[in-house]
Image 1 (tube, helix red, strand yellow):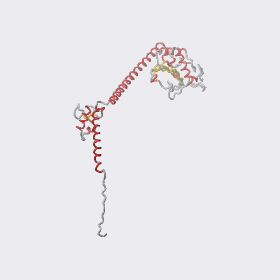
Image 2 (cartoon, rainbow, N blue to C red):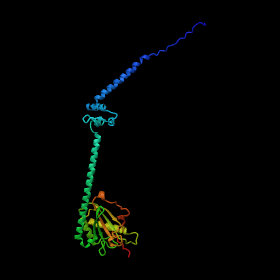
Image 3 (cartoon, helix red, strand yellow):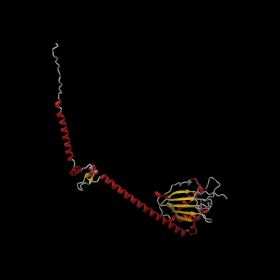
Length: 309
């Protein structure tokens, strides 16, 4: 047994199919290439001649050293290196949406310019009408109310024409402490109403008193000023004023004096008639700041209270 040689069998493993898989890889590459080729043919068939020419020119003149080349195509109808947009919309012309937006913006600017122009014209026209109304009122007052023309003040006030009928020593529009109009006050209001009869704007009427106080807390200058404004309203309506034009009847007591140096000056006792031209834009707030109002329902009709001695 010692001279017996030991036989060792070696098993050679065979890699079955190892030499048969290479063709599959080659076939897959071929199919991929064919797919890419047919995709290219399809893209070319969907692209216009002009677009194909521009794409060709783009790759022909592309340069990594030219910053414009990375995001532009070459317009063959222009100079060789004129950049144009890569997108199809811009290759076929200007972006329609951008063009539409520019037109809309231009139109909007033109509309705004026209509105500003119209606004200026409206302001000028309103100012002219305001001055014409003031002039007409002053002429009528000079002619028909010559004896009391110093007691009828016409002026431009903020955004309106203001007519004020004031008291004077020896010539009062209201008896002391009363809301009843004197005969002369009725005549003044009739003339004013007839003069503005063709005026179609809104009208506000305000009543004012001097600083003389009443001993009673139940009836004060607030009630008196509003009562007088209300009587003026009635007289103007009776003289032909359209009641729908009256937008406000207000009593301010002695809070808006003409003569602040002398709160007891009879001229502080007055009626103010405000003629507005533009109701939508120009009307002031119904309740002015720091100027409390009195509701007409708080006063007694034609109430008369004697002032303190």
